[in-house]
Amino acid sequence: MCLIGAVIFLRNDKSIFWKLNIAYLLLALLTEAAGSYMSSKRENNLWLFNSFVFFEISFIFIGIWHCLKNYLIPKPIIYVGLGIVYSIYFGFIAKDSIMVFNSTAVTVMSVVFSLYCLYYYYLLLNDEKFIEIKYHSEFWWITGVLFYYFGGTVCNLLSDVFDVRFGKSLTLRYAITIALNFILYSVWTYSYLCRAKQQKLQS
Image (cartoon, rainbow, N blue to C red; front, side, top):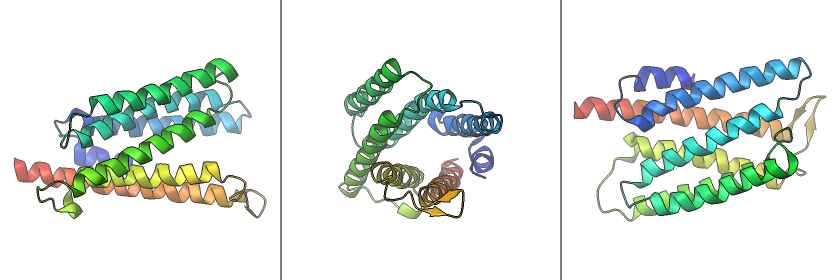
């Protein structure tokens, strides 16, 4: 649904970041499909998801940079965040190999993304320029990121608490993950709609 929305609303967009959303969502879809296939064959697919995390880190940081650049020069804080997350990412792989899920890097990047999103809100609230939030594409894109990664951080840190089973296969943590994915992609789809409206008004 989100990929379809991105193609519909962003296919003619001239911004590199918004065009990257289409490529990222396509990569995410292909990764999930390949991971599911490998799982059905009882093959280790953790290396695949670890590889995807590399691109995930890059894309989300690009998005945060795009949203912050309206309020400050974002390079210094983006480079600091990138340095921290990628150091942990490659350090984990060097220590435990790419065949083990890189949970440490995922947790750290989720915390960093959440903090940067909150910083964006702070800058937005202190900006004197009037913005109609309900049609502001960057606000909604960041909001999707915050919901997803803050929720993911809570699940990772309290994994034992959420490891409650409903039936044989469904756990509370898995149900929350599905809900977080739904929220992320729904909010992002709305941000794409807002972006298309912005472009139409500016043309």
